[in-house]
Picture (cartoon, rainbow, N blue to C red):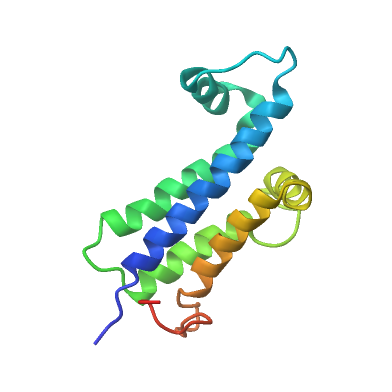
Length: 146
């Protein structure tokens, strides 16, 4: 009997969405100089088109990738779950160098200064710990249905 990791993948996507929301809100607040109140469309335009928000788009793409794993597969087996976990860790993993250096650097500062970001990042890491690792073993909880 194989384990279905779909619920955990959905948890990871939800946690990533929450992390993205907190980081986007902070980044937009930081970027606003004139104190104007921005509507949802203006916020979306900033996040998707302005170069100063390029660093945050990696999490946007990651959310879509992780959600697609659950949506496109009736069951998420260990191999698919490991692929999703690896993709997330590649983007938000430790260290502030490499391809996602700016994202990690900004996230590190936000975690330090804003508890909501730290809590959201912890939720992502908890979800990841419930997914199998490359060696075929499952994470800390050891079962997909926790």
